[in-house]
Image (cartoon, rainbow, N blue to C red; front, top):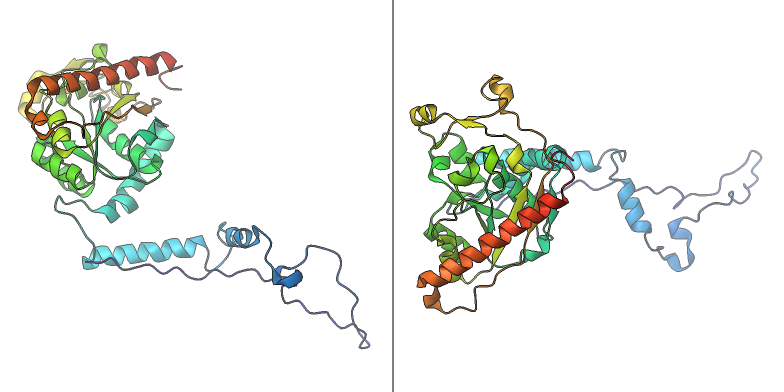
Length: 348
C-alpha cells in the first residue's frame, strides 16, 4: 500500500520593498526618493535575483518565527498525517515485519537523544559502509543490556550520507519477550539465522551481527573489552554466499554503562534468562539502578573485507571461514585497544 503524501503548506514569503509605491505628501506633492538602503530583489537590473537571496528568504520563513506556513505547521500536518495512516493501516511492512515509517518517525526519534546527548556517541569510519548494496557489519557486544546494538543502528542511519538502515540479527530471547518482540520486528531486527541474514544481504540491506552473543554482553566487568569466542564463523559463510563485504566494527563505552560485578545464576534459572546481573546499583536501588551510566561512546567502522572474489564453494571451506573469522576478530580487538589508549576518560 502506498503511503499518503504530506503536502506542506506554502510559506508566506516576505515581499517588503518588492512592490512598495511612493507615497503622497499632504497638498498632493509627491514624496521624494526613498532613503538609501538595500535594493529590493525585483528592482535590480533585469529583474535578476542575487545569489543566495532566495535561500535567505526561505530560511527566514523556517526559523520558527515565520508565522503560519512555517516549520511548526508542517510538523503538525506531518504528525496528523502519520497518525491517520497508523489508524487506517495505510502503511507498509516488509516480509520480516520491518516498518520503515514507524522506525524513522518514532523509534529513531526516541533513541536519538540517548545517542547524541546521553552517550555522546562519536562515529568514525562511516565511509567504510557502502552507499548501496549489501554489507555485513560485525561488532563486539557488551553492556549487560543490548543498548550497543540500538546505538549502532542510530549511528549508521544518522551518520551515513545515504541514511542507510541497519538490520540487526537478534537472539531467540528477544522474540520471546512480549512488547520487545513487536518493537524489534518493527525496527527491522530479525532472528539470527543464516537464511534470514542471507536474504537480507542479497536484497541489498546492511545487516549487523554481534557474534559474541550472550557471552559478550553478560561477561563480568573484569573482562571488559576482551572479545569472547566468535562462534564457528557462520557470519563469514553467510557473507561469502551473498558476496558482500564484511565491515568490522569496534564499540567503546558500552562496557561501563552497567558494571557487572556478579551474576545470580539461581535467579537466572528461575527467570529463564542467560544471566541475572548484579551491578553497584542494581538490584540495590530498584528501578533507579537500571539507569545506565552516562559514559562517552566511540563507534569505529574498520576497513571492509571483500568476499566477492571467492568462488561459490568457498562458503563450505572450514579453513577459509576460520581464517576470515580470526581476521575480523583480530581487527576488532586491535581497534578496541587503540580506542582505549586514545580515550581520555570513561565519561568524557
